[in-house]
Length: 136
Image (cartoon, rainbow, N blue to C red):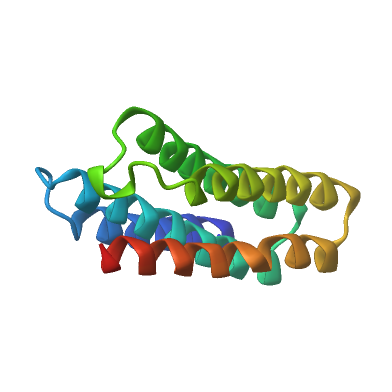
């Protein structure tokens, strides 16, 4: 029952997050919206890490990685003009993806603390991405 409540809550949070942005936004707006979706999933993943078992946490990390892959795809296929020639994104995208893979491995091993350590820097990266998207 508790798992159903969590899934329902997650669905509501993501629906609210997805509905908060206009459908026909510009490239920079689309990118900012994708960052916000990834940030929402990141925070949900951290809460799940603290309150749930390995299987549920691993599932949430996989969902976070899917959101991150969406960000990578967006930059590869439809990079906002404001980011042309900005090498910051290539290194950040690779680093975070590596952290997510590492997190999945340490969750399988059973180390909640190591998973937390792997996930924590991603929050700072998402904050930097938000800031850079807003500054442009």
